[in-house]
Length: 124
Image (cartoon, rainbow, N blue to C red; front, side, top):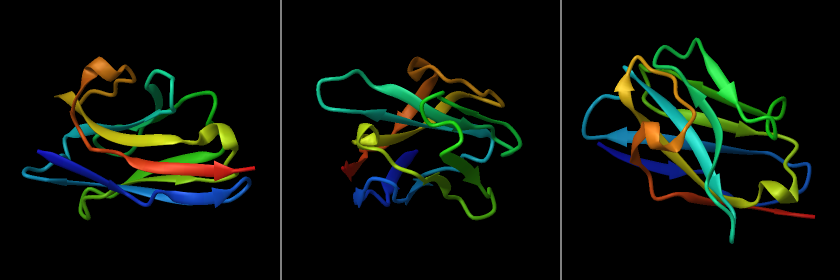
């Protein structure tokens, strides 16, 4: 399976962006999808994940209340709506597919297929 992210860009602090993650190659409707980010000079960190059904979600404390993850399995994309963006949200954002179906992990080693990332830059 291949994952492709889109929707990144440059935005001022306080603004919003919506990232999309699209899968090709096989269905990912039975797998959780996670979003991670990596800022320059920093380790990759977990942002959010959504269960295969879309009924369960988890968020990093740093984005809770500002970011919303969603999916519609009938339409493939998984979205990450990012509101009230801060300069510290600047990073390359990656989506990834859980290794195991029916799971909802938050550690990067529990995710297998990764996209190439989309750059998000928040100016102050």
